[in-house]
Length: 330
Image (cartoon, rainbow, N blue to C red; front, side, top):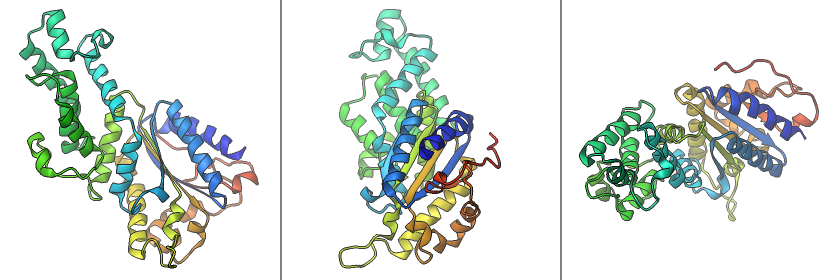
């Protein structure tokens, strides 16, 4: 019952409030019952989808090297329906140009159909569409230039901005592969003016770009849940740690950076879920990385549950009524 009431509270205060208004937030939830944490995150994801967000639920136990932020980005973007995001953005562009997207047949590009049925001059319409895309994507300060370059060509290809018509399927697949952080050879991307991959160093910029593109396509923002982070303390069959100290600290540092840089992100909610052992293990858990622990330790104390806390113990919610000490300001 506690988890559902907390979901209702976070939906009202964050998803339909602070995040929708342009804020971003990193939350942490823990429980001794990992199934309870997983159920909570799944329910919260459903609530976010119903509120109009692009959503992704990730199981850290299924991600190779969860400590690498680029791998989390890759897993997240693969959970999203990129085709639908692109299609919805194309419809929005068509509406912005003064046309009804429902009139455009699926087998035709917007430009071909418009020139044929509305008497538009092809070169003029292609130029108008390109200028619109460049303004919304390439000149958008929230979108990385390389990300914008790739998306602009995918969208432009779907709308028919190239003289030869629709972008070939293999080229579209190549650009989608880049967006999903696949191991696409850079030599195959140079003709699209894409010269770098998505990796651990630029993943935060690409995540911000993905959120903005989702918003341009009509979503309120992005909700991302990462579950099972107690895997950072797991051991192999031979008894050796699955993650080294350096790997664990790389993940903790990524979370610390996300918390510190959250004001540079917009319309994004990230919820990290894990078993209580990640809290209790002082040698290898969260407390072992002081730079992160100092940012969340104030959230740990107290006998009553504060629903605005950035770290929530799901077990504690069954023992007391929630307390709201300070409301987020958008």
